[in-house]
Amino acid sequence: MEVEDAPGLAPPATARPAGRPSRFPAFDAPGFLRLWLMGWIWNSTRWMATFLGSYLVNELTASPLLVQLVGASMFAPMFFGGPLAGAVADRFDRRTTILRQLALLAPLAVLMGLVTMNGALSAWMVYPFVLAVGIGGVVDWTSRRALLYDLVGDERAPNALALEMVSMAGGTTLGALFGGAIIEFIGEGEAFLVMAGFYIACFALLLGVASPPRRQAASGSSVVTDAVHGLRVIRRNEALVGVLAVTVVMNFFYFTFMPLVPVFAEELEVNALLAGILASGNGFGMMLGSLLWAAWAVRQRGFLYVAGSFGAMLFLLLFAAIPWYPGALLFVMLAGLSASAFGTMQGVLMMTAAEPEMRGRAMGVLGMAIGTLPFGMVSLGLLAQATTPALAVVISVAAGFLVLGACLARYRAVVSLR
Image 1 (cartoon, one colour):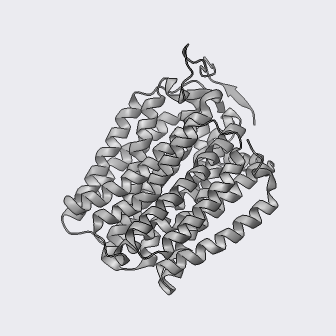
Image 2 (tube, rainbow, N blue to C red; image 1 turned 120 degrees about the horizontal axis):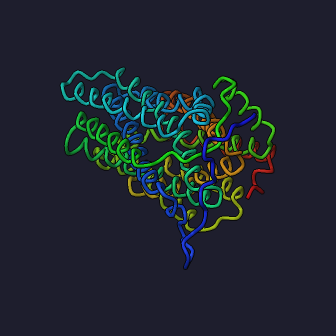
């Protein structure tokens, strides 16, 4: 696709200050710190919405399937809107796009809080709210991450994307923890109001970040045409198709368990606070692992991507099988630690291989692969409804091992990616 140069186009500076090189050079880029802190807050709010929605639906319906549909609603926009949102990120100003979605989500969270505090909440109301947060998630995934890459440049991008995974994992941890703590000590409706405050904080942080000059997709074609073009370009690269295949497997067979954590916690007979701690365990493990990958110059990225996927599913199997809260918490943290290798490397592998004018669409296609998550959530929910949550997770992970092995046999080039 042809591109046109934006006025004053200049590549982001990559020079580092004199002296000892920084272990986290991305922080030297102007605006990166604000964007990174915003990632922490945004991801905390996103997972707080997932935990809060799952908790409320479980409380109102006691149905594992309906609980899983909360997660499905959150991630459905990734599958159906990922490539389109990626084309939007490449065509329009990324900063403005993010600001607009935050301005819509804040009043919606206030409305949900007021309805809940007045005792008028019904289970069905949770789904459109979580769907709106999910749409915001796909905008954040494509526009903010591409904006982050624009800010730091090619040299510091791997470190920046690893640090971004830290904020994502940390947000997963804090979101579930905040959700459980606020429900336990303050109230369910008040949790929605806290979320609204988080959206406002994100808005304020992003106002202080300037949009860097960049190469944009030419405006002669439509956004839909741009999205289709992006799919065609990526399809020709077998290694990247392999990255997407592993992403599909992990999101269909691994990450699907997260909305069921309140159900596991109920079976372990713990309160809302301990349920929130359990739900945060996966994110805490991912955060620790992501810090390691950010501080360490990884050479064998493809190998780490694959090894982390296998390790995550192994520890998830142990989490589902143990009927003891401390053991379950330990194994879900170890699962997250392994999954951090997968989560950190997938973005690096996609973004570093994409042309500057294609980065939004690269993340959009990756988002579409992640968007298979709701289909896995519904499947796991049906299986849990027919059997038990623990047995359903064990069966799902066992199938995931087999499918992941088949994918790697077909796309061997993934393992050797650097």
